[in-house]
Length: 595
Image 1: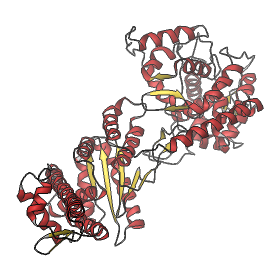
Image 2 (image 1 turned 60 degrees about the vertical axis):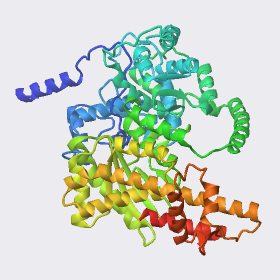
Image 3 (image 1 turned 180 degrees about the horizontal axis):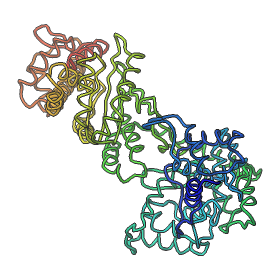
């Protein structure tokens, strides 16, 4: 290399790549894991142009040009991004850089590329994760297998909270520390130890560690705690029986990755015949228990709404706030009742807890009643960021469902729920309808949506028609206001008028249903003729004890209202109508009240 300038540049690159890293005395895991991009990088590395070739800045730069734009300002990835991806792949044993600084793909990496048996693959790799290892050379003074340590703690403690993890997990340096950590966590739960400040910012690893653990299929997260799935506890016992906390010794980097990159070791519990027999017996017992539970299923009541409201208040304290915001909104619509189809496009684990947010290109939620479809989008983004990331995708998702499902008999609306609604978002939704004739999307803050859930309790339950009447009021206001600001300022008044209307309508319905029942009972018990006509005086004597009729005027109004809709026949006096006619008339009345 004759050019002195090139020599200086080359030496600088080598110094940056192979510079000694600051020693770390606690566990670390890769941050910002993107498995889709990691898999794409392995695919690119398989080329003869890269595999077995020197891994340095020139290769990093070349690799970066192979990646599409995917939301970035320009196509390609920086050298730093490529280094981060390679370090993440080394962590899982999918690739490594050998002693000659050449990049290699392991057999586990080949299997990762194909996506074969992914939970089993990640479980094997995590069982083998250890300190020390040549992929994390800056971690010093630690000799333990972290995954086995986590299983040991959870088997004894049942669960771990986020706080417990950053206080006691990442400082485990050897097998002898496990019993000490268990005692400290128990003392902390009993209030004998105070919460320690996270001065080293270890909590930043928790989100990433939990996502890695979830890939193994052994764990679930309920928002606040990490725990082993019930159906996986026997597997965990078997793993702990055959795997210990001591790290495996290795003579060289190639020797280590021959072991670490082998996708078929160690043997998993489900591959052992004795373990399979135990699992079959366990499944038989679980099946019996499930059958018993099926006979006692109940529809969600107001207790479920209380839990949903409480969950919204705790969203920021969960492992993954955006995920649990979507999930809790799904639970909210299921708890409202009446919606026959609530589809969340995220994914759940084997315990039924949320695992991943809705993927791009589809709505977060699709909620269907008998007469309309509600496309629901949720976000915790605020400010201009909210508008930048959400306004286009939300509109596209709602319009796609509108094109697919809108008919003369079925309406389609959008509902956008956010921590706080940015004015630019409101401007877009207003303008889409007024200027482009698009579908109505109603933006509600989280607090406003919680208010609707609380009113659901207060009103004795909201129907899907009640919810539709609210959406229609927002749509009516959108078409009548002169600008987005005026529309936004009408929101509180809309909700207030809607609440009063719902209370009035439900009272009318309750009074009429009560009248129908009492008139029928009186005619049958006292006269023996269901078709007899009863004067208002008798009906008042029957109904005046009910809190529904505090004044006779309320009875008279209700009788007149019922007569108009054929709910009670009137020939000067009143009589009940047959039940079939009554149900048809009630349906007609509900529709008129909703308009």
